[in-house]
Amino acid sequence: MKSLAWGTIVMTFEETYLNDNILDALYDMHFEEMTPIQEKCIPEILDGHDVLGVAQTGTGKTAAYLLPILSMLDDGGFPEDAINCVVMAPTRELAQQIDQAMQGFAYYLDGVSSIAVYGGNDGSRFDQETRGLRGGAPVVIATPGRLLSHLKVGNLDLSRTSFFVLDEADRMLDMGFSEDIMQINALLPKDCQKVMFSATMPSKIRELAVSLLRNPVEVKLKVSRPADKIRQMAYVCYEPQKLGIINHLFKNGDLKRVIIFCGKKDRVKDINRALQKLKINCAPMHSDLTQAERDDVMYRFKSGQVDVLVATDIVARGIDIDDIAIVINFDVPHDAEDYVHRIGRTARCDRDGQAITLVSGDQDIRRFKQIEAFLKKEVEKLPLPEELGETPEYKTSGGSDRGRGLKGKGRGYRRGGHGRRGGHGKKNETP
Image (tube, rainbow, N blue to C red; front, side):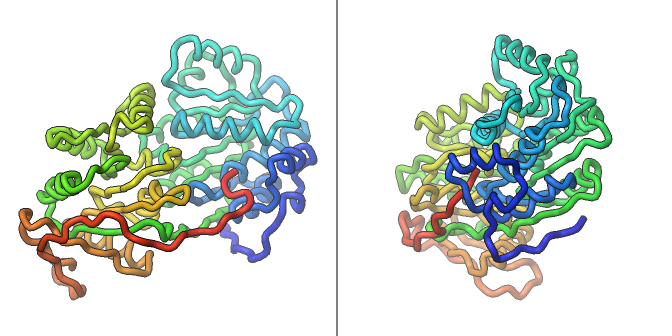
């Protein structure tokens, strides 16, 4: 895989060889300058290369793959009765977002339309999807399970598909779609051009890329540090003290619009049950829920019927919730990228936000020190409530790390905090 270095000159869309119909749509949408991920991916996709893109949500990656593919489809030379492009997304919500972006980008394109295919609907929706697929929709945007359901009953043929895109591939693997992806990939022609985007690059994603892509160009965008308006804090504690800390936080403030992140779905279920016993108005969000159940939980959370969402990283990216007040990491994320994605759910749309991480044990401490190294600062450590007892030292066994744990002396959890406004307005920030 060849990696591309970043340039310092901002390019415009007109400097690419996207066709005029695409450029007209971008002009109407007031998109002029390309984001770095677009600048590096669009020419490579237009040149026919497989691409592996590593970029966070909000960097413009949807346009980075849709624009060149739509431009090539509009230029012609593809079978009119075939599904020419398949875009895979891990969730219904993301599939809908991609489909909406597609409508804008394809405004001036004749004969290049899309159909969104996702679960969680009644039978009439499936029938509508069937009619669209059998009519030969040029672009299909789908969740893996729903696409397989249509494939199994013969509603579509992928043998002449020219483009295959995996968006948020790391989330798909986290949700258990690896086997589904490989089944779908096996039905594609060998010369199908493939594009894969992921917010993180763990070993399992690189293994998937090796399996799916042919000599891909790798484009990696550096992970941005969290916004300055997020007040970051941590409790160094023993594992049994974590629920006591959560209980303390809720006793000392009328907390609403809170997401508590846990590393595994079984952990989410356990924590949600424990919080319900503490009379905390919460609901779980994990991959074992059906699409209809996830939709219901998200609706109740967004509408204020539920105060606290207990979730796996399934909602750390790609879910548009602007007014989250506090993010709590019940488990320390595996790496800095996951940490940034999690706490990035708060302090959006010029609001303040707070992020609290519960750090227990040597492994948690090692991970959190790596996160602090990425942040280039030490995260504020809060003292435990006095009734919870002593705090462990903030160092790994046998290490010489500086800093000792603090005993709770009544400061407890402090709401508020001040920060500088982070970020600057940009043209074309998230197409």
